[in-house]
Length: 416
Image (cartoon, helix red, strand yellow):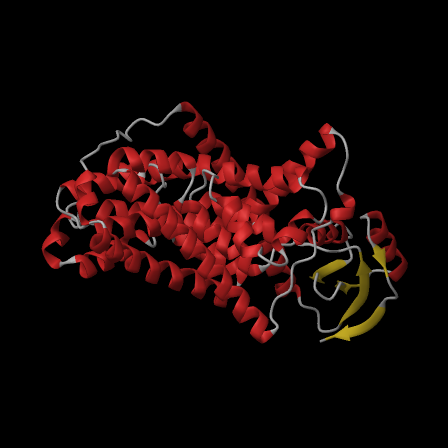
């Protein structure tokens, strides 16, 4: 029962911020002129601009991911996107004010400065590694030429963009919520209080080990940290908790890996880990007197506001739709493999106008409507469509055109 209560609590705390992040990403996608993100977050000083853009936004780890992925899809460099998702969850006007109330202004301002430096470093390292290996270029804006006009069309575009962003990470969100609830339920509640006698470094490592996979809101985590400091937790460990907790969790780490790759994920986690510990120890040495500003605080999380409940229900319904759609796709692929004919005709053709995963999904759904089709394979990078099944070439070309794309000359082969 405790685990189920924790699961529900984490879900209701996460849902509003995740949906807010998707909303902000959709709003930026529609309101910013075509090419704006690519011009400002794809060239010089892009990392700095990304960090400054994210500072005032009230986004925690799960909320910042769809916003960061949206910037990347709209043309930001990988480094600018990593800088945005690293710095943004640790700042925010709401978090700054709450931190100053519970832990004092010196601590609050120091935390903001630490977040800025950490984000800048993570972004610059990512860009430097990509430029060295030639692994990254600013992403092409996603279907910018198809951007609609008018209020109704823009609202539809916002909905489609936001849903597409959440769809890419929905299963990591579910995994992260379950892991966070398990940690909350089964980890000893007095663990942090016991670290006081172990010293700043060891206490910081314990705080880091717990906060990295745990989902905790930037604002809601402040009174928890203040209460822990009041019971004897070193201020350095509290800073680690407040930097790593809001910026990461299992869901975030998985989503970053899927969206930006293994190298960017390693830079993201490594920079956040090293800098949170370093800044925590630096604060204890530079401003030891400021630690006295911390005092116990307590927030009652047993009751969630109506808007959190509404967001939780809405997100749960959305996840169920994604699960049903992905389950159906998985079942279709399984059936295709079980059918595997000894010799099946395969048709491959280039497709123009296919620039993103949403485009590929639309084309795949249209092609799968043809009863002759046994399997579909689409490569957005190469701009190709490959189908298996006894479908007439002209019928396939017509289907591709009706879906809004321009097909090239088909090539037929035999798959074994």
